[in-house]
Image (cartoon, rainbow, N blue to C red; front, side, top):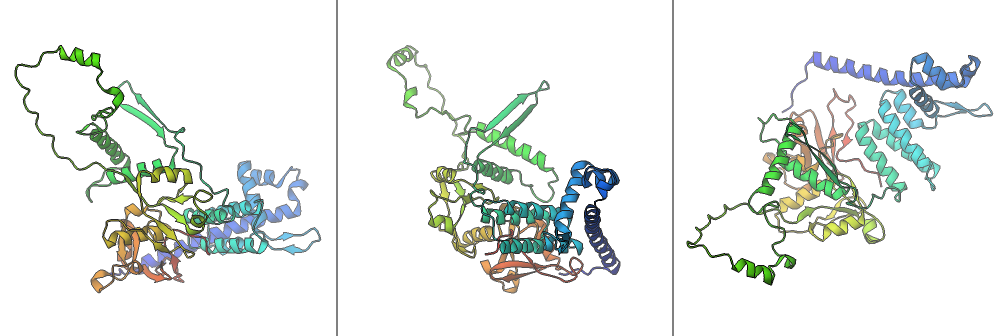
Length: 449
């Protein structure tokens, strides 16, 4: 049910928005002042060796910060050619968005880094495509927080520079775990897992074991993770645990030799039979093979994984083909093949019910909490019915999206609305967030195709 926003609260939100817009626009005017000083040659006339040195002294800044401001002014302010003709900014869409107060300096940094990277490629995109990329990123920067904009920018870099996007081969040579016993008896440890698949498994296991035990569990995350680690150790020491089950039970090299058997024969048998040992308590079956959902783009799949391409884990980290083949030997792989529109074509079949397949399709489409700007992983999310099930909404992919617990509650407050457009969830903010109420695409940002 929608909750009304009081007038005093709405006025406070409007003032805060106006202040943010004015601050961002003022930042652009500051860059214009720096560009004007550089154009006039003020630094040289005042005896400074560079405009950066002048800005550092005038604004009491470190030289590195002054250098960054001058570089931003060069990219975002109008220029003059050698013939005296006015030229537009190098990044016109970014400059316009910053001047309007629609983006933050953090967005500007990501945009500049991305465009500089693309321009320096051995085979850079054509000028018209570079302009289109900059315009698209500047538009999305007005809707995405910097962290999500960086994900979208990386997608453009990977698209134009696929060789540079290949992940490192999975290698265990960089693995380490150091245990240090302190004088007070406590234990300190520090480690590193180089293989992204091993890291993904560890994160998933700790994510399950360190989950809060209900709404009244107020333990901090570090404490929950420490107790999850102790649970793993206790499980390893328990019946049939890794630390209690002999690792050489079936090793033929450890078989008793003839001389050893003769020695054992000299030990007399006990006069009384050994009392029957109590049966070990039943325990749940130990986890078997890993269940992995590895996403492979159809373009790379057609070229065969051995030649080119890599998989992507639920966390978004890329995995090299050699590591995929190694894990596939002992994992239940659910195929997830993508088409040209990145829509699930085949989520595979296992001995599971239909909701499991829908859940995997939601994982692939939304890649976590679909609320714009949220980076919660799929395992931490709930499947939300856009058209409520009690109101005869279908339990189907076209009527569902993933939401973390916090954003699930926020959506049910009624201020935000969700609409499915072309198979993707779009979130419309309330007027106190965006007066124009422009819909925002949900899920992880993707490079337009």
